[in-house]
Image (cartoon, rainbow, N blue to C red; front, side, top):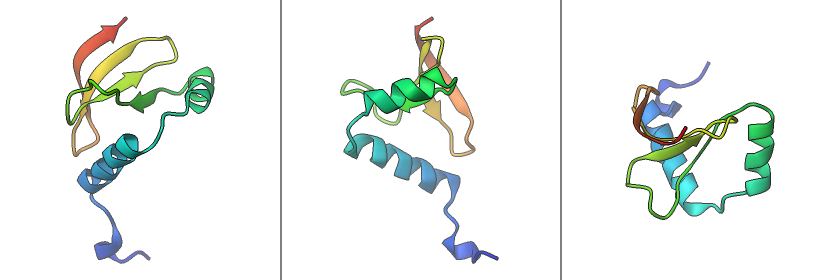
Length: 81
């Protein structure tokens, strides 16, 4: 059984994810593979507003989203339909 103090909150995991996105190069081959398998991908670009992510669906649809600490995604803007 895990020690409760060792478990990260959703907010901490989201912060870790945001830090990962900002410090790692985007692997387009891996992203394309995920999309081909039917999975959405998340990323940021240089002009992505702070605390927001781009979510791209296999269909090509892109949304600017805010990820809540609860894990809920709030669509801020549809970038491409």
